[in-house]
Length: 337
Image 1 (cartoon, helix red, strand yellow):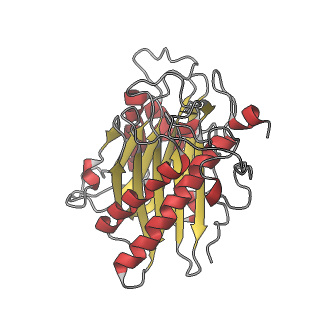
Image 2 (tube, rainbow, N blue to C red):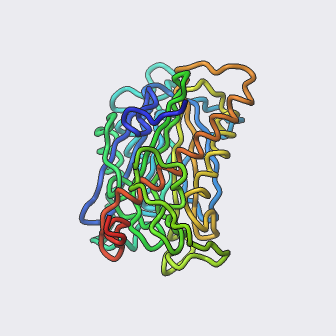
Image 3 (cartoon, rainbow, N blue to C red):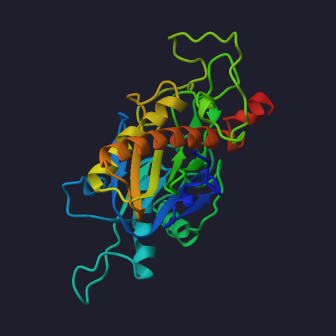
């Protein structure tokens, strides 16, 4: 039996905390996943316009065998400065790789950004963009419970024609292994089935977590691009960025496969997806709390399938929980839920 976790958040995975920080005036923000101990991680990039920091360090052939934190940020390239803020806060509290006695510790932090510069608000930052401060604040605020929707990296996001947002979901297997997902949804594609008020991810919903709407029997699906895509599609102005996590003791190579499989959750929740205009990316992380049974490839197959389904749910939750902001109306306002 598969059930959602106690919080239905990625923090149901033991050993993880999440923090958000926002610049409400600038309609942008940062979300940080903090691992209690350095944890192996991998990344899979599917979109054509990614923006990242230190993702090469997560290649299984690299020396780095564990990350201290993963960062999702708004702000396009400016948002990459959030990684430095997260690293500074973690170093200040004694986290990081000890290169040699007497030298500063170096926290291992990777980050990805989305484009929210057109979200409105005051982005007249001059020579002091807010992202380093937001990264520090989000890390300091990290805990087990956190807000969804217009929060953190999801504050200025838009999903197709709807207000996007920060989403999360989790699932627990009978053996106690947990899989969680966290995502900031800022996609070109639509999260809603054309001609209906049902999410593309409706089949994976648990306990009405994103409204319980179902496709109508007479809805006809064709191959045309949906009318409720983002109205102005431009390169580098979109991106859905995510973290999937588990407490199953996976190697970095196995986590790479988990990230690849989890990316199918995008395709289960958004249409179209992985376009030339999106920077879609999935991190995969393990807190290594629970052993997995042999044969290992079968265990990875099962966990990858769960990760994709959980990520699809998280995407729909992020849109469902979002509130109208500026030019983008929320799903709930659009369909009066």
